[in-house]
Length: 71
Image (cartoon, rainbow, N blue to C red; front, side, top):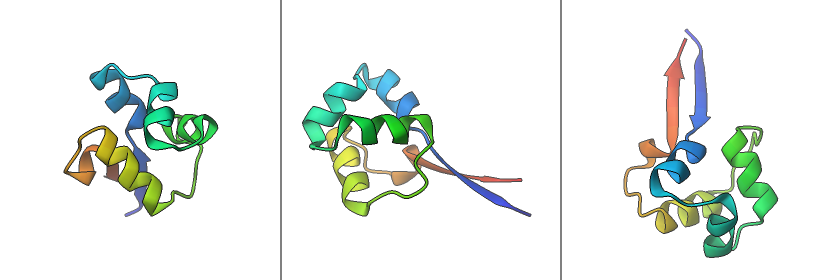
């Protein structure tokens, strides 16, 4: 069995009606970094970035942002 971690940032931003640029401004995270996270091309994520994103999006359950899939 193999595992795959996916970040659901793009979905969450659409659900909240927020742009990547707005999230970048509110979190203080570079817009290019937000874009990489939303596209799933970022392979390493900073815990501080995760915390800021969760705080701004008012998410208390990390599984709304990070999903673990089993293959």
